[in-house]
Amino acid sequence: MSLKSALTELSNAVNDLATLEVSTYTGSLEQAVDPKTGDLDWKAFKPQGKLTLVASTRVSADYDTVNFRASDTDSERLDELLQLHKTAVESAQNGRLAIINMFKSALGL
Image 1 (cartoon, rainbow, N blue to C red):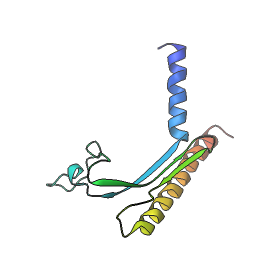
Image 2: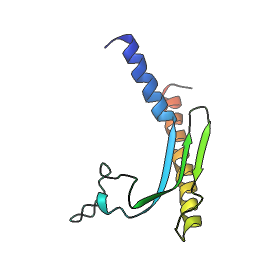
Image 3: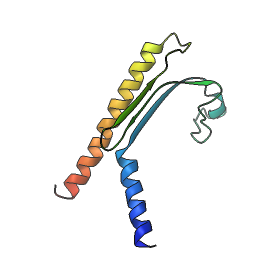
């Protein structure tokens, strides 16, 4: 492996660790649920067809943030779904912060 490709992989790993994406959907997951076990097959999860994107948030390493909120969804529970999304974003941010603090501690920072 060349130094350039190693640095590219390291950069991608840091970006993946530092960038946070949360998307909240509503709808039916029939295409992704195994009818025998009830397990969700994440590889079969496709946000199309019976799913509707309710909200999406992307927070970059430099805290640049992009938010999306559906303006028209037929869900009667839109407020609940938006609160769920907000809670998921906060949880993910706390998880990322814990990982960063773990690395800082391991490095003695």
